[in-house]
Every structure is written in structure tokens, then in C-alpha cells.
Amino acid sequence: MNIGLAELFIIGYVVALLVTVNRARKSNVAALACPRCNFGVSRSANFCSNCGTVLRSAYPSAACPACGRIGSADSNFCRECGASMVQRAI
Image (cartoon, rainbow, N blue to C red):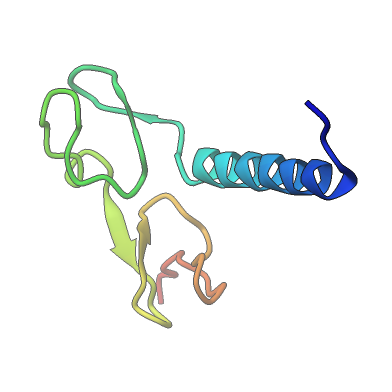
């Protein structure tokens, strides 16, 4: 089988694209675990895909006071607009 330069370029491009997609998928998955079965879950999951436990109550959320985006209650800054998520006492 004789592979030309154009074919090698296309193969290299496809491999690079697959590696990029795989890295993007891995970066979207947070290192969280279901509190019931300890199965790995993403930060955006509402339910555990292993046992069905409701996850939203397990990971408290808070709305950004500036833009209203829902984020993790333990965040110091909003991921959308960068505003402080820490409520200061007056």
C-alpha cells in the first residue's frame, strides 16, 4: 500500500482533531463523586448516572449577584462575569 503525502496529512489532521476533542471532553468533567455510591459525576449533572441520586442538593449552588449565573456555592468568583460571589456583611 502506497500512501501519498496528502493522505498522510489528512491522517495527521484527523488524529490531532480526535486528541483535541478527547481533551475537551476530559476538561468538562469535574472531579466530583456521588455522595451515595461514590461514582464519578460531572459538575453539571442533576442525577448520578449510576444510582440515580439527586445531586443538586448534594452540591449547593448560588447565583452570581452581578449576572445571575448559577455556580458552585464555594466559588469566590463567578465563572461568567468574574464578579465576587462572596456576600459581605454590611
